Image (tube, rainbow, N blue to C red):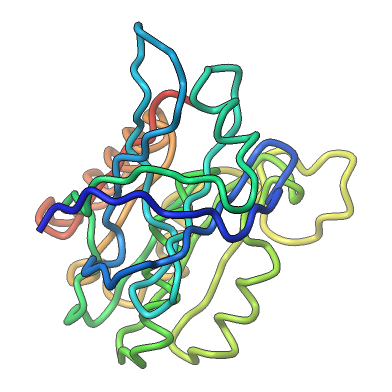
Length: 236
């Protein structure tokens, strides 16, 4: 069921230097699945691009709020999002989409880059709260450690869910104190994280170039196409 609602902002947070989050109060119960998105409308006058954008729901249905995070750019919509304050009203329409968590999967590998992490946060939180028995691995690529969105939450989710592990890899570690994995997500990294390549369910979310690259990589690894779900985040 698609809803049209106007909800108040109850929290704003600067996640990284260019990623901002807002939490919206749930004034009524909304049925959605982890991974769904909403059309978010703000009061901007932009005849060329319109006043609404699709944003993944970063919260889990088990949480008492809606969480949206986006990378801030110079567009009118993003600048308005960046200026939102507590109690401002935001119009939303949804939920929508098919990039949702397969709850009965035995092994799920989430391959994310940058702001493409948003639907994965909701899936990971949901799996923890619902105590889903699936093995759940997040492989999350960023340019620098400072670009890791929700950085303070990943170890918390690992403590809540013994079946979940977050694997971070950094592509531009120079000049940082990073001592973890480096480089883009590759075949070796995926094989290290995955027990059963043929039967695991893969989710890929991030910039279009990354999504296309990882989709092609999984093809060369002979992962069945039916086991791969993708979501491209354009318009960075």
